[in-house]
Amino acid sequence: MKIKDKTANYKPAVDREKDLKLAISRIEKGRGHTKEAKVTIAAVAREAGVSTALIHNYYPAIAEIIREKQGRSSRAMRDVKHQDLIAERQKSAGYRQEIEELRAKLASIASINEVLLEENCLLKVKLKDRNVVGLGLSQPRSRSHDA
Image (cartoon, rainbow, N blue to C red; front, side, top):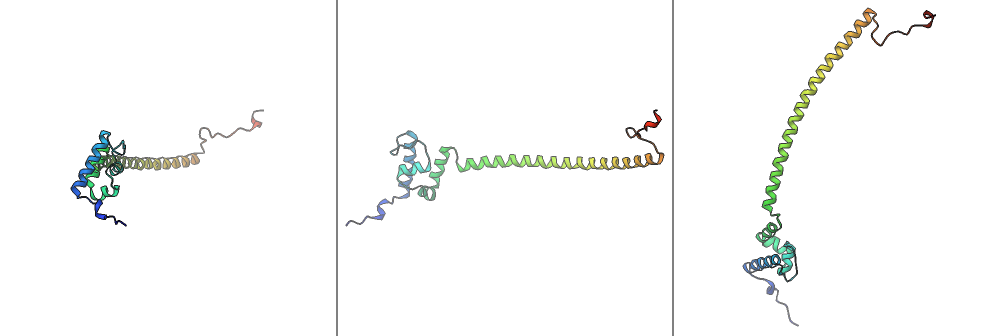
């Protein structure tokens, strides 16, 4: 019985990196052995005969190259998220300013409302003191006077 040598699959890092770059190139040119159409980490791993974990864990530069080719490099994604964050902060500052303006208007309206309520109470008292009948509040006449 022949014992399989476990070190037979190990390659120096430089050689493995070269294999991964060649796998990327073959996929891009449509000449891949695995007939992969898109450059992804999984496709490159299959093409190079390695696991995706190997690329992620030991060849982060290769993983970044693949992400760049996909248009989603971590640097580009970080920059986009940073720009989004700046825009959201500007919107938030605008909303805070609007809230402050609305609070000031509300306080002004509440003050005007209190003045009007006070004036309304004073007018009601004056109407009672003079026995004046206000518009729309006239007493209905009895029918005995009309006959």
